[in-house]
Image 1 (tube, helix red, strand yellow):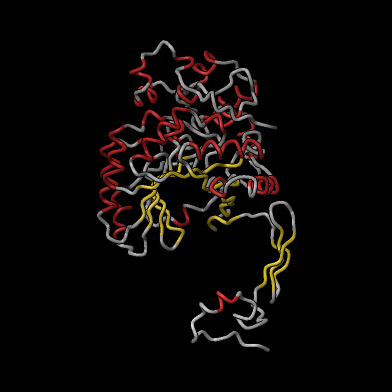
Image 2 (tube, helix red, strand yellow):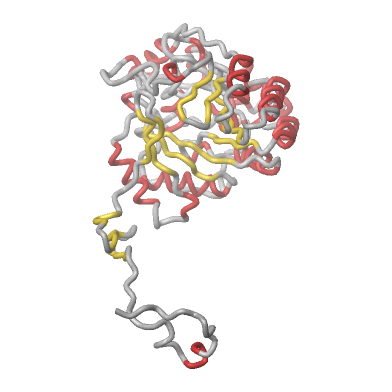
Length: 405
């Protein structure tokens, strides 16, 4: 499958909502209030396949349906294989649970010393500050928590989390996630950031968010001013396909960048969405043009009901091999598997090293050509023996000669 990256036609407009005043359309609270959340709403806007219809009926038991009007406009309503449609509209396949799939596939609950905080790595914590998102990805790692469809009864405990961080000086890095932290009000978000900035040993504050993608209207001047005040705040957004990289997202990323927020992107490798080298290349190139550095390409986590999205790891390695050497290194994300059960992120890399001996490493480049790099230096002659006369005269007299055999 090839994808043509048409540089002249980034989405910009209101699509099905042309009748809505621009002032409403640009209001992120209007977007939230008018999300598509029911089967009836969906069927007024598009014709569902039987598989989709059964999936929507089941969604309330697994992960709620919610799509912002802005993001819904990116769906090709005439194509059941549309990559945006696949990510957002439930399908019957979500009802199928494979033996290896788990509700908490990453073992986060086992590494949670207080509610809403995961301490898996030595120097950093994951702080889950909400269970809500602007829209719900059907492959969500935390589908057990977000939207409360499974009655998991997750309630973030800000004070307990903050006290834990304050009392653990080894924690220098805090990642705010959820749900989506940017759904919090400016007041709540500023409170959290100010408290974290007041902790002397917290050096690094990050936010994981798909709000710029689902709801670029949320990236207001007021929000950017908060980030500027407590920065640097690093942010990882989540874009999976070039169709998501719109003019609206580009403008939101520009506002964040100008507020001093370094941006990275985390994609999930999804069958029928982005499991193609040309699609991935188009995506990473468009991201760089939006001031976003491709950061991670995730192998999908083993969440319940997600097997229809699963891609063979060999295909992921093929995609990385197709990027490396064929585009700038800035465009090549790190392909990782978040180890099931809580082992953390493990890089997956194509095999370039053939042998590693005592004297040399033998490897191949992106073209498959074979090279050798010596691991030991082999003295041959004195340092000045083969130099031109004018160069020899410039060597200080006390410079020791290289020893001969």
